[in-house]
Image (cartoon, rainbow, N blue to C red; front, side):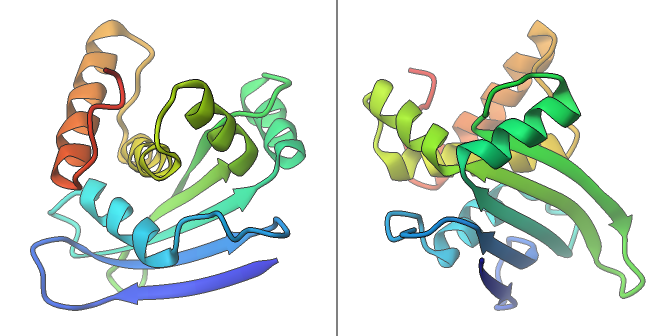
Length: 164
């Protein structure tokens, strides 16, 4: 398993992020770089949290299917799962949680939707962080609010509307 820890601490209007990124796949050369994941996640973080810890795991279809079945009762792999973190940490930071991104599903969805793979990775990272912040899309009003935020964040990052 490849593991990278990245701390972003430069002065900026975005929150600082302690990112723990791990990948359990071999031949992961097509994956986004840690700096890209960090940028996308920071863009979706709440500004009122000055220091946030986030874990991102990149997994294959088997692991994704197993987790999706165990935690959501759906026996198939999914693009992103989010697991809430502990919240306030002893050092004053905030443990937001963990995202589990399934590389084969994300790549397949990008091809099927004729989207640039990097744009789809960015979208699902932002989508997952918003879930960790408490946003959902179970009801229509929740879905509209979450989609509005996704579009706004992705536009700031230079990506087009993922729902167009």
